[in-house]
Length: 347
Ligand code: DAH
Image 1 (cartoon, helix red, strand yellow):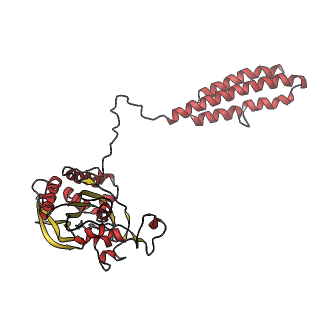
Image 2 (cartoon, rainbow, N blue to C red; image 1 turned 90 degrees about the vertical axis):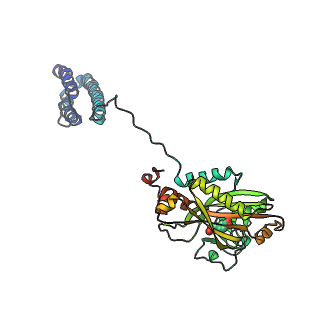
Image 3 (cartoon, rainbow, N blue to C red; image 1 turned 135 degrees about the horizontal axis):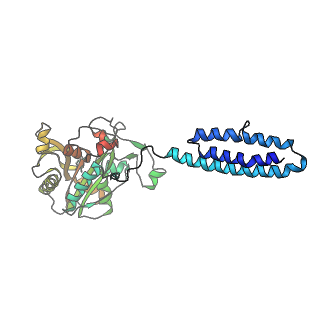
């Protein structure tokens, strides 16, 4: 009996020593096995308990258990220390190294161009108006004097989300006829004039939708800015002066503007606007078509309850992507929507 009791302390000490001197986790596991494993020295000691006299067993068992608890605590502490060391970086920290720079994001190029357009018009006293992207045919087409057989109304060109009677969401917007994703921001002209009496001076930047296949110059979703000015005695001269001012602000003071006769059902007369400057020349062109515009058609005034004998006005609409592409020399419209930071970072 005395022999077994005397063996406990030295065995414990050598177990603790072995654990402490383990250099890494595998070595620690090996030391653990040598003492606590099935063939371990400490296990062997415990097995010998049975050979003791009955009255000697409690004292010896207690001493062995106490030693075992101590060894297991030491094992846990050593394991934690070695794990910590294993997860530490191999290369020591250089506290004198410069900090990591956090890169700041910025506005999307289309947002930047939109903001510039809004800023230019604000200087002329225009307010920003807004309207729904899910529209009805009346606001998108009928009230704009766009005939039933106009190609823009064809399902090939327009995303319809409901047809026929106003129902569900369509009914709650007071939709009449089919419901669709607006094909242009011109629908907001009608919404604003329905709500407010003249005079009116608004621009409408916003998202529009068409059934176009995506290619370098088309995308089913893109952005436009609409402009509408209604007052007494408004002329084409006002329109041209305004457009010239804004495009010089946007595209540089060397920008020239040209009006070409065109047809839109909601304006009479109607024009397409071409512009020219150094950027256009760089593209090997003299003029680039940039916008549609004209004097608001008397029928459109009638449709919103304005007296066309009293009020006159002009409207225009142009694509924001097109302006951004020319301004930044971008040759593929799809780059705007891919959210590739390597592209976006450049603006
Ligand atoms: N809505 C036309 C389009 O999407 C652009 C446009 C032309 C708007 C003439 C107008 C306008 O307000 O008067 O192509």
